[in-house]
Length: 194
Image (cartoon, rainbow, N blue to C red; front, side, top):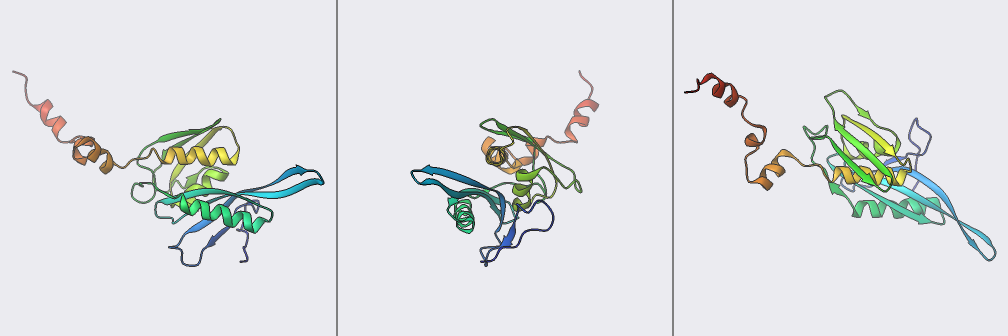
């Protein structure tokens, strides 16, 4: 299959729609040439990191290594599709709450944003949000700038995300009870203490 580089960027990210796999989009985050030293010299291979998502709340990542670039990308894409997670989104465009995640020396902070903010994130984090389908988010990466650590820290943060409905079910309450009634507080203040 022929792959076409995405417009803009450094040509490292590629985007394509697989043949009818439920609209799954994959993005190549990074590709690295690695060497194995053997008796006759060095054997070169390629390691690829790919993020896949349906832009409707499901996303996954995978790494693959092979002697040829297309084979490494194919392996990484297959692993990413097997490891997809579902992330609850607020109004289908942002996170429900701020969250942070860590992996190794890398750590990320993800913050929900108002409509029209866009994706304010760099490199590997942007690829995750674009494939996930989040339109408004602010992200900051701290510590390690290794793309593998950044992606894994982002997924650690996304797995902590919870929707108000799931939190209410876990606590055995209604969603309205979590946020508190806005009209109950003024009514309590209006009543005189006896």
